[in-house]
Length: 138
Length: 486
Image 1: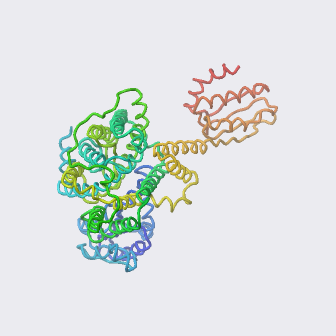
Image 2 (image 1 turned 135 degrees about the vertical axis):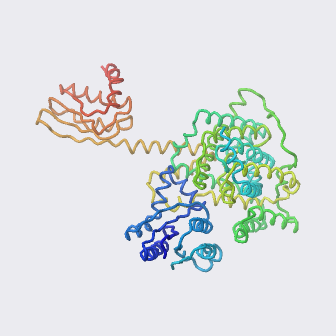
Image 3 (image 1 turned 180 degrees about the vertical axis):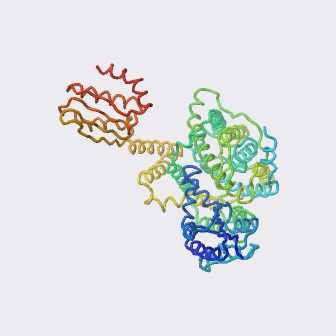
């Protein structure tokens, strides 16, 4: 049923929790998981400034989502990772709709009400604009 | 020239490029004016520079979608030149800066950026942020609470307005709102008009009015060299960031040449030297700009705005510009580096802090960068100059093996020689260099010294495991230095 699963991850605790749920869904019907990590302009700037070269920048990002990868590896699932540039919300929407997934799994970021009001909730934007079913893990 | 690629770089993203270019032009106005004020020149000098540089770099730059214009880093380097010698010398220095940058590009020296360690880079942006911030203090001198209130209002609009819409740059909205308030209530505070005259004329070609003598060159050359280096440093850093954000490659040597051409044109059209801008380039990419067209539109639309708004610009209160500059310094500063200061290696932290302190004291970014690079080089040499020597007695009272591990060069030879015991009564000493590398003259000199000291005690010295490169070096200069020793 859910064979092509997209997991939006940023290496946070929420995304690690989301990963374990993605694993459970994948195990229902031998699904595969695509992990998408969005690098926004602020992170991009910081990574380049702190990194020596492209290789190092890539490594830093790999390390960032390693905890999520660890969850998938432990479950012995087939997975692929993608790094996408842009604002988290629109970038994930674009990626999810372009590649036609069966389900998107994403962690809620756990902001308080004021932060959500100001920053806007990424998960809310996803739920509204992604064409496949979306699972928001609390 | 590859027509397909040219077409893609120019017209691959027409709608996105035009819209983003307009946004960038709107965001450029406050900054170009504020940077002119930092440099101590008329606002037109910064505006003309931004127009010329953006227009030219659209054609000759190496990184499509990157925005170059008058910048804070460059403005800060010009302050004393302008104060002591005036605008005409600045224009001449700008042209010379361009010539130097073209030479850098032609001789493929853009790679020098790799000799600038990241701790120096971080120190550079932090120092830049601090200088832009402290440059605003002058505007507060002798002003009343109205000034503080208006700066606070400007900042509030800059940070809150994006929650309503991100289509219009919030800095421009803040400037417009604050200007209207000041004009409406008739507040008596200084405005751009009190600093210089603004015209809505198009820039025209002129040759800087300076004596073409050796003395003039000695005045402007140091400034031009600093400007050329800092301009390239910031431009290459920016192009790396845009490369990463857009997941594409760029031509660094072409960018270096392009920056040079753009600065030469700016200098002849009455503009000050500039370079790529991290903040504006990020705005461009975020607004959908990717191609060369976005940079061209930014420049062209900026000129249109200057012509249309020329009479309004001098009404802008300095309070609004100070607010914009405070925002620029906050976003330029690398806050992560403060958070990680205690976590990163102590020498890296020291290099970063020394770079910042040097810049803040000298008010010169290039001196800070050079100091930082030098200090890192010393730390690096010190770090790799640790040599390990282990002794092993092979035949008692007859033969001993010294195993040397590490890099043997000028910084490590003193250590190396001190680790040998020359007083021992032996027949033969073997020096095992399998894990060592001889780098220079001093390394060969040190081995010769060890050899001759042992020979004084009639101990024979043999070598083992010297790698081919080291061997070649020893054969080439070994005989020479030994002959001169005796």
